[in-house]
Image (tube, rainbow, N blue to C red; front, side):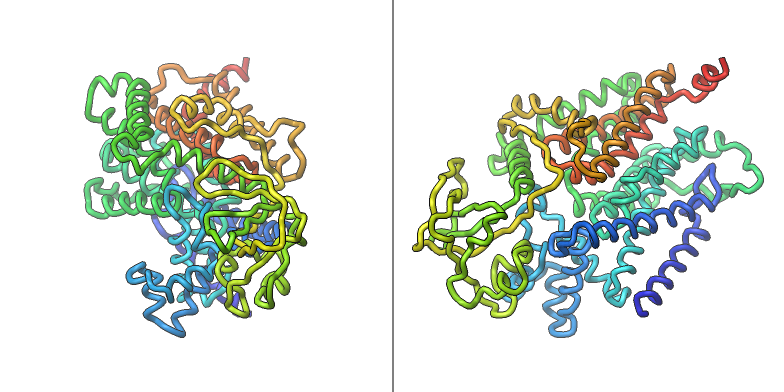
Amino acid sequence: MGDIVFCSFYLLLFSFIILKAKLFKLPGLNSAWSVGAFGLKLLFAALLWYIYTHHYKNRYTSDIFKYFDDGKFMYQTVHTNISDFLAMMTGIGDWGSKIQGYYHSMASWVNGHDSTLYNNSHFIIRFNALLMFFSGGHYGVHVLVMCFISFIGLTYLYKAFYPYLQDKAKLLFAAIFLFPSVLLWSSGILKEGFVFLGLGLSIYYFKLLLNGTQITRMQQIKTPVCRQGRDKISENPPNPFNPWSIMLLLLGFILLFEAKAYILLCIIPGFISEVLISKVKPAAKHPFITYITVTAIYLLVGLNINTIYPSINPIQTLSDKQKEFIRLTKGGIYLEETANDSLFAYIPVTDSVNIIPVNAYADSLRKRGIQYLSTAAFCYQEEVTKKIAPFRLKAGLKFDLIHEGHNDTLHLTAHDSATYIINTYIEPAKSAIAIPPFRPTLFGLISAVPNALVVSIIRPFPKEISSAAILIYSGENVFILLLIILAFVFYKKNNPNNNTIAFCVNYCLLMLVLIGISTPLYGGIERYKSVVIPFMLILLLLIYDKDKYKKTAKS
């Protein structure tokens, strides 16, 4: 009953805000479009919950649940020790063994494969912990808040690109708000909600600060007289140089960094290029050359930063990330040798019956089952006994011995003397694809680019479709490919928006290459592409000449 009351209150609150707040008045459209889009997001939020509840039943590894559960665990310390809660929320004084014990009891705080660039789970866990003060601990409220957060970001994206697509307002709305994978992955307790908010804030306020008076003038001049039933955009254009705009731009950058820092890195060269185009006349005359030059220098400097700072090696980091993802898709159980914490025994999940507890401490394995091993909490202590339980592998079992920091792997047979603690349990991925590892050199990375684009844009091939989920994802890819063909057949000559086209191309290519190289999993590719697809569709709308299509259709 409490869940219904809380959810109803926040649903009415957010609906009222969307109807009344000037932020959600989409130029060229009436208020019903915003309300309808938010309602559709809520339907997809329910669909996402249904999928993860009934088809992916391991709550310990489910992103849409684990950040909420960890936030709730952190929040509960308020009732036992407020100073511990504040230490975890702020990160100040959290190095003690007691606070570290809290962290290790969470499913996703200590997560080695979360990001080799920046551990970006902490922010969303802390956010959920803070939200508990207002949600009453009800999951549905957190979903509604995340839907609202991502909806704000999508609204800002619409407003950022509307000045260039005023004659295609409805198509722009569809490109940003209505694509299935965007609706799905931006409507759960996931990092994508903050990513969309960060993208929307950073792009909108960057353009406002860079070309503010020009953008508002374009909106005033080009926006047609409102028809009956449309809301007239009457608010005064914002002052592009006020402190509020600068603060929101910085907030967008911070959100991107905290949620998924690599997205911020992919959008920075576009911002640098836009500054040059607006300030340097030769750059403005040749926007594509400007983008190519800036991005090439940006990548050359960034990818070879290890020559200046040897401890930072982006290419090696990306290679390690790719190997880690390949390992994750393969699945298996990793056991850390008690006598040497740099040695790990690997066995397939199917051999889990050959893990034998040495003593009675192993209550988690006996009572909760093999899936509980996927939580970070299990890596350190058992659930009931609070002890680190030792295990043996059944004599005669074949396993791989991995030496951390070394490339060689030994294939051995278990004996009775060696003991282990279970380090990680990973379920095998159901939609894995084979991606050849690239050599961690600049030329090795460049050689992997063509295959990465095939993986992220074209695949899966028909013979690779093995489930309904992959079939739906494949259908999205085919639809986008058809739109690409349509846009190039009816492309706009002498396009006045070449720099905006270059911005979208630049961001999309960097993201698609990164996704195609590092993600050997169709489910992961679909999710990570959800923050790219709106820009791909906006790019096609910028290229597409609607009048040329109409003339061809009439003839």
